Image 1 (cartoon, rainbow, N blue to C red):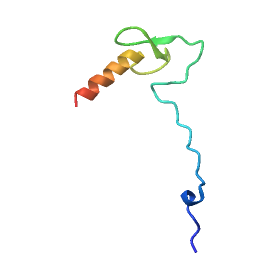
Image 2 (image 1 turned 90 degrees about the horizontal axis):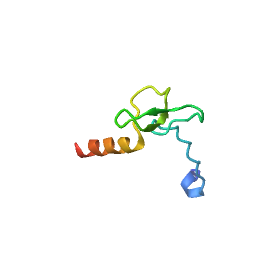
Image 3 (image 1 turned 90 degrees about the vertical axis):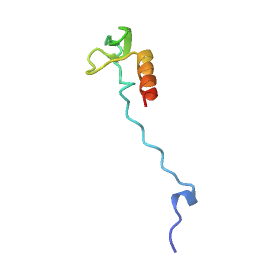
Image 4 (image 1 turned 135 degrees about the vertical axis):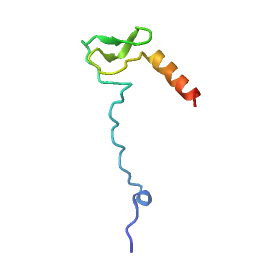
Length: 70
């Protein structure tokens, strides 16, 4: 006879922790924030971050533009 599956016995594995996303990098409390490349407001990223840095408002607006250009 086959053993019961995990769903039949009520046993489930806990989900693995997700790694931080580029929109939410690990921050150093003492490191200054990089400027947004569009509006020059402080972004979520430290100055040492490589790549385009957008503040949350500009990142949201860019996502809206991309979604509507479909």
